[in-house]
Amino acid sequence: GCSHACSYCMAGDTPVLMADGRTKPLADLSVGDRIYGTERRGDYRRYVATEVLAHWGTLRPAYRITLEDGTELVASGDHRFLTDRGWKHVTGSEQGPNRRPHLTLNNKLLGTGGFSASPIHTPDYQRGYLCGMVRGDGHVGSYSYVRPGRNKADVHRFRLALIDLEALRRTRQYLASIGVQTTEFVFQKAVGNYKTAHAIRTSTRSGVEAIREAICWPTHSQEEWSKGFLAGIFDAEGSRSCGVFRISNCDSTIIEQIEACLSRFEFSFTTERPDRPSRVAYVRLVGGLKEHLRFFHTVDPAITRKRSIEGTSVKSNARTNVVSIVRTGVDIPMFDITTGTGDFIANGVVSHNCFAR
Image (cartoon, rainbow, N blue to C red; front, side, top):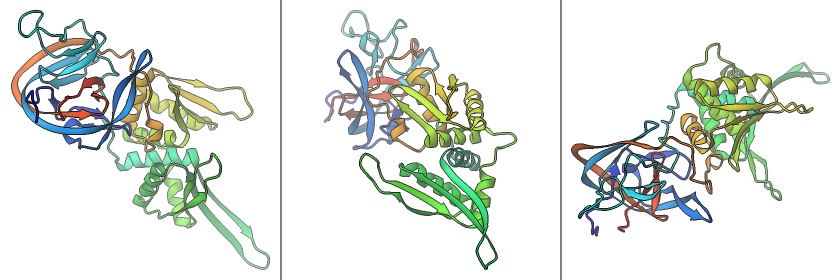
């Protein structure tokens, strides 16, 4: 039963931050889905994974809340968001029966601001991903040798070994789409603190030649190719730890391509080229969690553990000040959920969940 007739709700197309770092429309959530909520730990509120415990829909008058960065949120007047001054309803009054904490143009919502759209995995995106992944972590080679008493033998080999099956199997799928069939096998069993590494390989001449062609640098890179390349090179050589996001490589051409693709999507970054024999350079994405999430959503890397924001502070420099609250004048289907933390992340801001079960 829902004692308040489901008055705390949002539009069904509101993107919700999932525990795997991707997003899903609020209307499409299901009981048992893992999403992000928040909880206070010490002096800070931090992102934590939680579970959807209930999900339902209703019909309510819609209000559109617009933030300084252009983020739009459509919710009922009773819905609440977390602001720099605590939880506040969308609408209310300073006195009378409707007196309650409510949003004003002086409020700033907590969070990173609106989420970016995910890429479509087009053939260009797939080739970009293969280029980043194979150049970053794969081995492609051909050589000849003469066996005693026999003719010259030609050997063609491709191998990619990874701990994360998500990236390995995405690569295998993309290779299959260009006609390259690979075999998966255990490359190294778990030993001590090292996890099991799996690998894919092919030893056919046509397969290796097709891979070489697929990972060629494009003369004029398309936008989808650039997204795929960033996703592939991040899965191969990238990391995000303790709030630091970086991609490393010792190939100057790869580093230049990373820089060009990041610039294409207006990411801010800095490149560190230490004077060391290893010649490894590091491209660091700056701008905090807001830009890290924008990268993940814009290019969609495959490895979910690298997309984790568990324990990250909710504080942000995002431009999430409220600039307008408008009643649309129409009733629309809306949805709400109950979560383990009592809240969820709706299009980049912290939203309360309904307390009904």
